[in-house]
Image 1 (cartoon, rainbow, N blue to C red):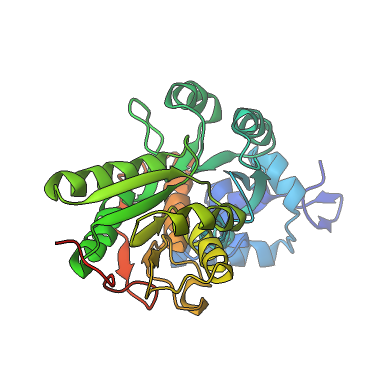
Image 2 (image 1 turned 180 degrees about the vertical axis):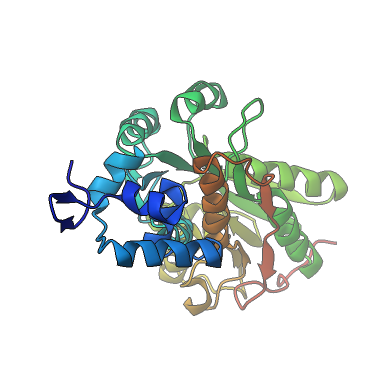
Amino acid sequence: MRTGRSTGSRSVTIGDVAAKAGVSLSTVSRVMNGNGTVDTDLAERVLEASKALNYSASPLARSLVLGKTFTVAFVLPDLANPTFQGALRGVSRAAAKDGYRVLIADTGEVVSEESILALETRRRCDAVILCAPRMSEERLRELLPQLEPAVLINRDVLGTSAPVAAADYRSGIVELLMHLVGLGHRRVTFLAGAHNSASNRHRQLGIEEVVRAHPDLVVTEVACGVTFADGHGAAAAVAASDATAVMAFNDLVAMGLLSGLGEAGVRVPEQLSVAGFDDIPFAQYTTPPLTTVSVPVTELGEQAWLRLRALLDGEAPDHNVYFRPRLEVRGSTAAPQAVDA
């Protein structure tokens, strides 16, 4: 098998470099990929050995020798969603520093496709990151052992060893709803996301917590969705309700709602306060700027990669990490014109 540049009767291999430098094959691979985590002395030995042997790395040959593709799969519900794009960006950038590339699999919010795509991509990759999977907890628990090594983003499943990087959506919605309560709102609508979304359930739990603490608060849940079009389609029902404030499942829904309310002549926030969730890059540029809850999605992706890299290296990953979202108050929320007595 030809694995490097020819010197004399045969090609120099990554094994030759490892032997000359006195290091492992994986160490040579990391150095050749520019991984800055390799000890400086070891890296210098590898580079000196590679120069002395006139070695030129072949990515395909390196994969064959090490039995790795240096590719991981990222399975997500909807690539058009900026939140998932942010998590993907974090994974891709962090993985690239370690010489890995990311294969993207978009399920298009079709739950039945998740297991199929996850298994198919795992056969072509070294590992899998499942971002906000929509499948049932029972199915996910059955699937994870077949995908190992695997990491979860924004989904926590009891009884599995898969590391998790997630946002604390419950605390985020609590802070947002308390902001509205503090402004004087007592009739609030929640435009719910996908019914099989774990983060939607965490939002519901947070809302229930606040309602229990404030008996005069009424939060009405309306089935909606996760897209701009879903929010736009809900505008008529929201405008016809007695709510003084609306919390959308995410910023895309909130933006669609703002558009629909504008077309209906409803002034925000004078007549109706509107809030989103996630703080995607466009949220601060809506009219008016959107009050929302900021989720550090890029950091989520980076932390997911760190845990997956540990698994790929045969090491114990760090404990699960949960990010607390941060409330961003902007112009789309204000005190209601008439506060309940």
